[in-house]
Every structure is written in C-alpha cells, then in structure tokens.
Amino acid sequence: MNKWKGKSKGTILGYRIFVWCMKNLGVRSSYFVLYFVAAYYFLFEKKSNLYISYYFKNRLNFSSFKSKISVYKSYFTFGQVLIDKTAISAGLREKYTYEFDGIDILRQLLAEKKGGVLISAHIGNFEVAEHFFADIDFDCQISLVTTDQEVTVIKEYLESISVKKSNMKFIYVKDDLSHIFEINEALSNNELICFTGDRYFEGSKFLEADLLGKSAKFPAGPFMIASRLNVPVVYVYVMKEKNLYYHLFARRAENVKKRDAQGLLHSYTQNLESMIQKYPLQWFNYFDFWDDVD
Image (cartoon, rainbow, N blue to C red):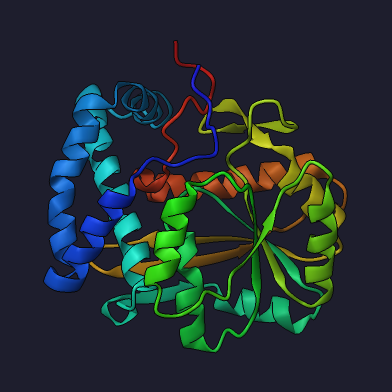
C-alpha cells in the first residue's frame, strides 16, 4: 500500500530549468520539454503508474490501451499545471485567459459578511485562482488550510521569483488544534477559508464515502469543521482548458444539514465526481487512493 505522505515530487533544478525556458523561450517551450519529462515518469515511476492506471482502468472503465495513453497524458498535464502556476507567479499572467462559471455565488457569499468555506481538490490548478480573482475586483482574503510538509526549498524559490506577493494566507494544521482558532478569526473578518477534501494522512481521522463507484477514505477535518460553522460552503475548481486558458467553477453546497459531516462529504464527492468525469486527466492522485491495488 502506498499512501500520500504530504510531499510532492520535484527538484529545485527542475523548477529553475522550466523558469529559464519560460522567461527566455516562452511558456510553450516549457511544454515541449514536458514531452521528455512525462516520458521519464511514464517509463520509470512504476508505483505511481500502477495507481493512476488503476484509476483510469478500474474506476473510469477505460480500455487497457486508453489507460496506458492516459497515464502518460496525466503526467504531461500535471507538468503543464505546474508550469502555468510558476509562470503566472513569475509575472506572465497576461499570457493567460479564463472564464468564470459561478462568480455570482462567491460575490453573494461575501455580501452576506459571514465569511465562507471553499472546498477544492487536487484537481486542476486552484493555486492560481487568486491571480484571476484580482482581474474581476474580487477583493477578498483567502486562507488555505494546509499541512507544512512541502519541500521548503522549492517553496522559497517560487516565492523569490514571484513579481507580486501572494494575498493567499496559510493556516497550518497543528496537533494542538490552534488552527481552529485561526479559522474562526478569519471567518469573523469575512474571509474565505479553503480546504482540499480529497487527501488524508495515515493515522488521522477520516470519513468514508463512495467515489467513482468504490468507497474511499477522506480527511474528516474539512467536513467536520465546515458542517459545524454557520457559514456557506462552496466547491471551487480551476481547470485547465486548451492552450493557456482556464475555466473557474464555483458551486454552492445545497441541502446539507448543520453538523452533518457525512452528508457534506456525500455532496462533495458527487460534485467532485462530476468534475473528474469532465476532466479525467486533471485529478492528480498518484497513490493508492481506494486502497485497492495489490
């Protein structure tokens, strides 16, 4: 069994190479380099190949041939998303266009002045959302609830090349539960709190729900916290389309009872499943998500 450990793969040298290509040769030149990077992962990352292939073949019912092709395309698409995130942070935002499906939902949420909870997933490219929000006078503060387990040197490098300091704040999950107080404080200031709801750590609390026809474990925290707060809950995704174009989605969680974490999770998985079906190559979970691969 291979569970997610809270860290993403990648080296500082790899990021430097892509940034050099983007700034000197253009974003699409970096996409060209990805053909070789994706091929490396496709040929040598046996475990992640096994898990992502299971997703395509057993959960999405792709043929064996289509599943293999999709494994390669998934790596390539993931690389594009990472490049786009880096390029936008490095000052190349004007190269990208987007459309926003559901902006009125977020505007109404802020107008209610109660704050709100956004729940996303490791699908698409949510981390670039704030750069698009700024274009539509979306003057709000978003706090991302996360773990502090990413590779620090890469985070520091990405921050060093950013032309504009991010407005995104981070609330780190701590064993002493002090993050709960930070969340309540942010909500009292009419801020938005964002969780990702599709990865849990081994040994932490979890809830179970069906996704793509089979039960899986989800982190209990986002759904327990969101269901207990008297604030709106919105599912948000930022999905890559062709070329340098993004599609932002916002959908309000409906008919979920207060303190019904399981009900909220069920609503979330239904919403996430619809997004996965629409963008199957953009759900980036390269581990044994369903705990079903030998």
